[in-house]
Length: 395
Ligand SMILES: *Cc1c(COP(=O)(O)O)cnc(C)c1O
Image 1: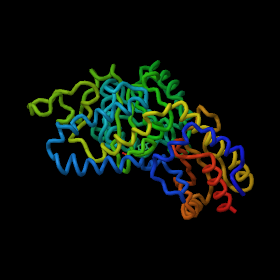
Image 2: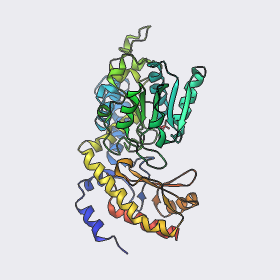
Image 3: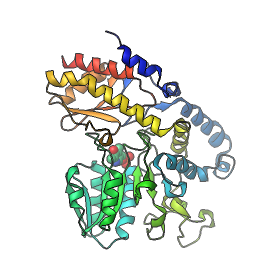
Image 4: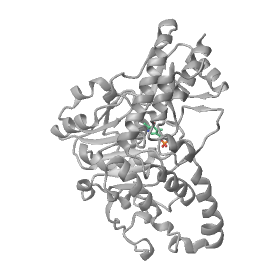
């Protein structure tokens, strides 16, 4: 069997097909896990070599303020991410992990409201729940973390809720929530929003300003391809800056770090949420990785993503008749991120077999087979080969 002609035709007119060349991906692999660790843009290797040889190796300490300008690196990376998430550069801070930025966002949001209830999705990603639990311990247990199923969030936006903490795209099912509608509904009740964009940023156009989101956090190593443990980002809407305190008030978020003043004074804009010395090596990798998006129209990217996931769902459909395999991802485009997941009682074992064949997705507890699609480096032919491989493993 070879790739069907209709899929080859789709690939032939794919406006993003030239992007595949920009990634270092082994040819014998169908890599469907860019939602967990993005593939490496080739230019990152050259950039890091330059940082090592020249910026660190030769220029040493002079690189903080010299040509390399490491001091402004977080801000330059923030500007690139801001474009992808529909924010102003001054509303984005880059550094630390998504977990730590969740803490910063939640702490700042809770400080803007007298209400003590944090409403979240019962199936939210563990770290979002854990960080809320830790913050609650710090605050002496005065918070209530209210967890409800994601389809009941809207009904639970009651006037006692202070902060709505949600992940836009569920990491297991790939269900995409209505960020615009839920944010508006939350605001109507005086509730602030914290959106986790771990599976959104770089996967499709996000419009934080257009949705009037208050706070958001996101991940650098998933669809942004910044490399393992890449710095994360924090978004704070401009209108919240004045009232949102900086609790992790480190010197790199100070208005003038080298003044070495005795009192903390926040830098302008979201730079105040940068805490300590920027992680130059990983920031440099992320900085160059983001250049892959520079000439990409995110609407075109989204259309291709939907075409890939539609194709996958269609090709997998016959398998759901023959095997105990059920689609976990919504079929409606508005409710789908850039991944497709299935329930299968033997999911863990099946995924191990797929990975052994070079079809790399992942397993998520309890029974989820997860396949991430990255429009920058997948073709419809890849989707077909993946579905063929899955059929063989299931048989
Ligand atoms: C991947 C992911 C994170 C990752 O947090 P880290 O601090 O980078 O480990 C956070 N939230 C969600 C929803 C994720 O999917």
